[in-house]
Length: 124
Image 1 (cartoon, helix red, strand yellow):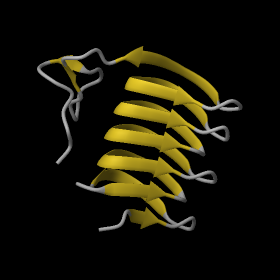
Image 2 (image 1 turned 120 degrees about the vertical axis):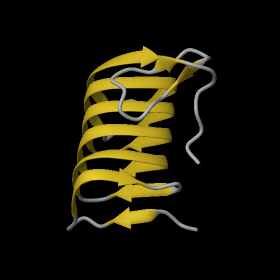
Image 3 (image 1 turned 180 degrees about the vertical axis):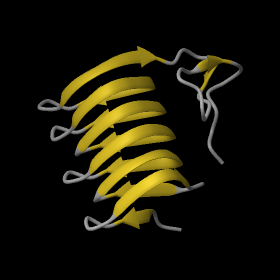
Image 4 (image 1 turned 30 degrees about the vertical axis):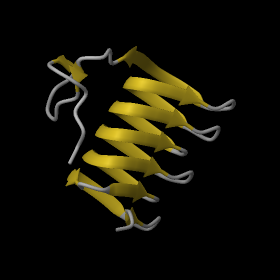
């Protein structure tokens, strides 16, 4: 199954849950929970993301909780980034607090910070 794609002309608002991959090409003001989220180069996303993996190529403001976070050279981010691993390409811009989710931390929907409870969760 391929990713759920929200085209450039789309505006997403509220809460979005997918057990798979999500690609935002337009604008979103939402809390997003998925396996993999890609914020494309021309996308603008504001909200909270809980995912196994996140790749930001466009603009993001809010909170990210993910096992793996990638900020592309075109990324512009602000807010908080909680990660297991973080990759920042040359040229990326971030004004975000970045914190490591140590082994044993779990991301939880609705929490403001990762909680110490077992392993980092996999979103099914």
